[in-house]
Length: 153
Image (tube, rainbow, N blue to C red; front, side, top):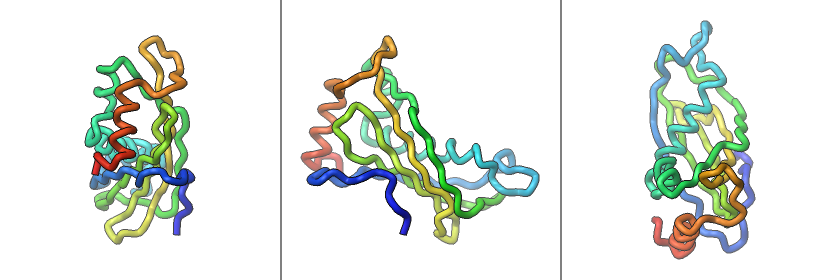
């Protein structure tokens, strides 16, 4: 059992999830034929984009509302190497918080369904002038309200 990176608040709605699949490309491996460690962040990104786009809070959705969400923290734990040509799945899990940020956890599994990598990111929300938002902007508050009511299933 992999220990979760984020605590679940009592009474919080279930996390939101999305998964994407991929195949390790030649350009992603080092001379040993294993995925270079820095590429895992882009695998996380692919799953993050799938999840946020699914729920209408993707990068372009935020940009239209004059909000940006830079990554403040990125963490990865490596358990097994992915190799050239291998297929894999990345699951992104968005955890509930009422703060104006995105707490997202990632799990990568190889074709044998073994966990190869886990990690997380924390993204803060900034306004168009790059000031830190202390409260969720109205469109994100509405998203949180739909999530809490179960309207995002």
